[in-house]
Image (cartoon, rainbow, N blue to C red; front, side):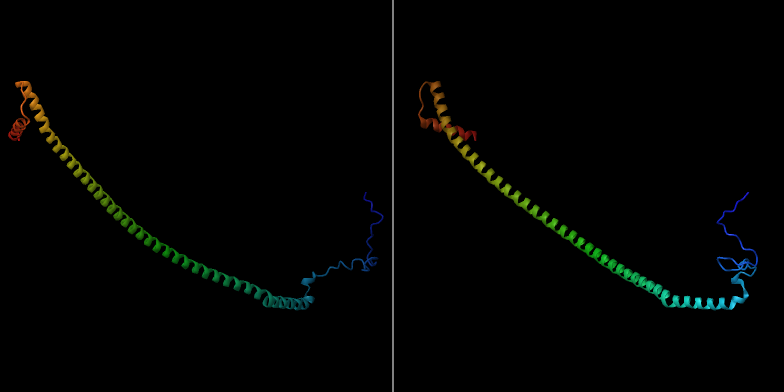
Length: 196
């Protein structure tokens, strides 16, 4: 069994007035139409709809649309500026690349000229060094030939003396007597003329 607590309110009977609200019992629960669909309230609902729509339209036209339009215009201007800046930077980059390529080809040409002149200078120096070495060798060869000729001349001069001494010793051994130096020189000279 269900027991109602002592503090629970009792629902007033029909025709009695509710003690806290002052509304007769069942008066708030009438069987009427839902208020928005009540045809008697249509004119006031339409009036408030027109007023609300008008205020909303004015708010949109005066506040929201200008702000959104300003934002869109600012973005459009910023995008246009960015595109202009990008095209300017691209043209500067293209000019810098063209200048770089031009300077690079000029540097290559200059490097070729420097290499050619260095090669020519090295060849000329090598030719000059070779000529100097050849001249030095020719001088040494001439000096050596002169010394050889001097040594040869001295040797031939001493050959006569050696020949005279040798012939004198041979004659003395063979004959047992000494020949005169003049006789021996005349005999050696005559023998040298016959051999030549």
